[in-house]
Length: 153
Image 1: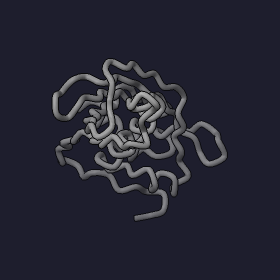
Image 2: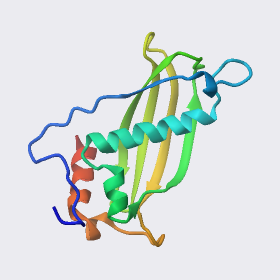
Image 3: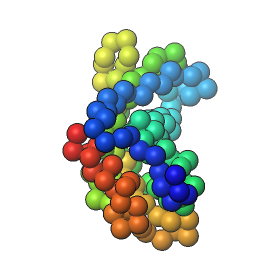
């Protein structure tokens, strides 16, 4: 495989995306014993990178190709509290993608009860290492095609 290529799931392979799970740690709690709100954004990043791995777009490989994907915006709605030792199941979905930007949606539920904890969205763009916007469609059509295939699934 050439340096500017990335290994993606092969054609005809059916992707079964498993949700990401996070076991809440004690150090993530605040003074009230509830998970501090800032940790949810970290969990979103963990879940997004896991999603990318599952569809065959490893973020480290993308960085080696000099593609970065910074956050443009994040919105989070907290529906119920997460406490120390809870396990949160994070369902991720590629909601929008146009070759230059993408939006990921997150639904976080309690593993044991299924109770809705949080819903969120993050939007990202694609840049080269110099910080200039790039179009994956033009520069990396194999990655662009994979994003479109996954978004349609």
